[in-house]
Amino acid sequence: MPGSDGSHDERVMIPTCRTTFDAPLSSGRRTAVGRAVTALALLLASACARREPPPVPPVEVLVTPVVQRDVPVVGEWIGTLDGSVNADIRPKVEGYLLRQFYKEGQFVRRNAPLFEIDPRQFRAALEQAQGTLARAEAQLAKARNDVARFTPLAEQKAISQQELDNALAAERDARGGVAAAGAGVRQAALNLDWTRMTSPIEGIVGIAKAQVGDLVNTLTIMTTVSTVDPIRVTFGISEREYMNRAARINRDNYATTERGPSLELLLEDGTVFAQPGKAVLADREVDVKTGTLTVRGFFPNPHNILRPGQYAKVRAELDVTPGALLVPQRAVSELQGGMRVAVVGADGKAEIRAVEPGARVGDLWVIEKGVKAGENVIVTGLQYIRAGTPVTAKAAPAAPAARASQ
Image 1 (tube, rainbow, N blue to C red):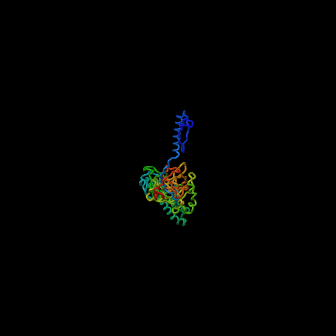
Image 2 (tube, rainbow, N blue to C red):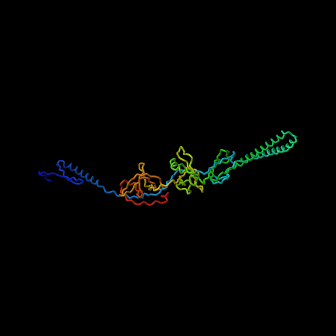
Image 3 (cartoon, rainbow, N blue to C red):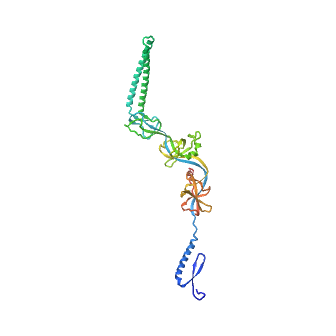
């Protein structure tokens, strides 16, 4: 455009975010400056566009309110099952195993026959002992006759007093011989009877560890019989758990099936055993190697379902926490060693809070610090949530009552 002196200037308009300005250019730099101005204009336009981003659409999430109610304090331990009575079957005599009567793994009654050792040598020993007894009885009869005959003769001085005393001593000796021979007969009879081994208890009998034809003796364990109804469970509680409840455990008559805590057994397949059990005793000492105190309980086992050697989780209700705050376990996430929950604030935006979880109750988790009753915690869509993210909250479907109340 013409200038005041009649010369011609060329001005370009440079756009900014809010206004424009005029820049006088000399004719020699017109081309280079034009290109620079064009690039600068594009950059400024792009910067202006970035300063005003479009609003973030809210994220749709499912929420559930923080529940407040009384919660039982439940302890859980790993337990080992064993027979309430376990009887190792050992022979009382040495000999060759002749036969096995029972079927391995079956239930047997008390005094049911299990094994038999070859009885022939023991029968012969019994007959020999009976013969020895008969000879001793004959000697006793002769000694008694001698005393009866010598007594009047001694009174008449027909024989010396020494002869009578000898007869009396012989009678006493014969009487002792009869007693010893009688004991020998009884021992031989016991040995013969012990060749037939029976079960001292009723229960499940195990696999035989000796086979027919084996030479067995008093050190040989033939098999084991276990009483499994009731079945015994053994588990260890920590020293802290013991100290927290020492006053209750050590009160009079606590360790009885009537006053001990009720137990629940969780099996390997995840099911809960139908029969509740009872804790009946705590050991006298804390194991110095593990720092635990052994506790024993018993469970009814009417159909012999539980067997010795099984591992199972043992649960017991120890106390009740009043007014506990509960959230679903899926609402709690772990981040850098801490636990977090996402809460929908009053402004409709997500808040990320650090929490201190406590005991688990079924599918719920007790939160000791970090939330309040009635607040809505996010249970789905957590991967899309950051602090301040606007959300559209919808109520999550209610969990089954059975799972929530476990």
